[in-house]
Image (cartoon, rainbow, N blue to C red; front, side, top):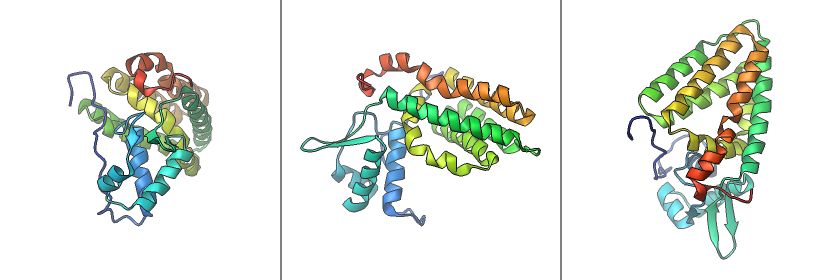
Length: 241
């Protein structure tokens, strides 16, 4: 925990996957672990990646590790340069904007469809709002982000199109890194909770236009902070994109 008003950003260690008993391909588990660490900045933009070190930390062989890295290259999050090495890509605002556009468009569509249901039960969404408030009070950034993601995912589920949420995740990670950079200030988290509350209220009321307005503003928040984030973390951004 840091001083009042600020959240910590991540932790620097990857967890071992050796004891994970979930029935999932090793390469998928490696991908999930690395993607999550890149997304929440435990592995920061520009960081060099050593296959030897990663295999040791994750307790996996080189084959699933290389498969996972190839997927991260396809997602634009990692680059492999011959005779130079592997590194996490810097944040490119063009990629963040593409991710914002896709997320905003899909979520507005999901929200609109969810509003058409005559029996809209938002009780689970209210519980997620409570979880976000408790996380804010506890200075638990990871718990807040998890509840934030769960709320948006549930909106897609209520629309009857949960797969749309999962399909956009590789692209959304470009936006997610910006979201993590903007989160440590408690004032930002409180504003996000207020926006989430307004979205849930609109869904419960069937207020399509109001919900669309709130979702547009909400989806664009991270990009609006780009100038201040670039000034604060210049080493994390690709200034040419």
